[in-house]
View 1 (cartoon, rainbow, N blue to C red):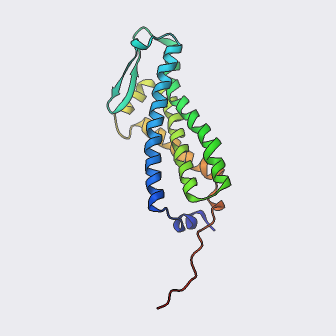
View 2 (view 1 turned 120 degrees about the vertical axis):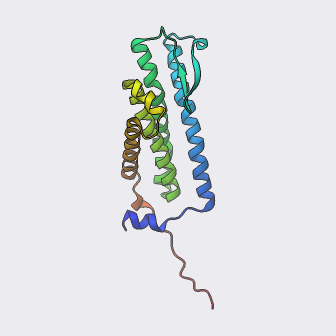
View 3 (view 1 turned 90 degrees about the vertical axis):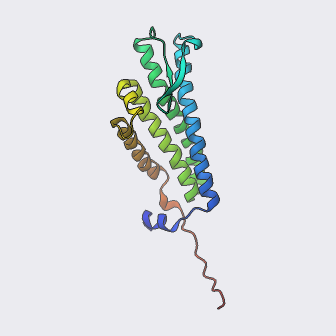
Length: 185
């Protein structure tokens, strides 16, 4: 049976759909917390006192402003730390929990929850790379919609769908059995 036919036959219940939305929102909040905490901790490990850091917002995105004297390689490490740390944490969570859970109980709901987790991980890896290598472009992209940095992050998200489909194929999901009981008329 083709993957598209399986997708057409699978449906989420209202409770599952609600849980998926809550999971996605909670995961987004956790990702932001991990990302910003990684910036703060890496800056502190590299010699910045906590009182010198300025947490705030850049547009609608949370940010941490580093002191002017903190330059060079150490600053670049702090830029990389946020996305790469959050991406690695989510990738490990995906591999150790969602992938195993799907292989034990292959159903569409587990498949979707794993996919959401892996997409967040891929986007964080993209942000970590962009923030470290092209910090100026990353900052400009954070303040605009559909910037070049966003397009790159979306590309990583699409690649996560293919990666997830290879690790957790939809063909393992058994289509729901349709009832053959006839109702009296």
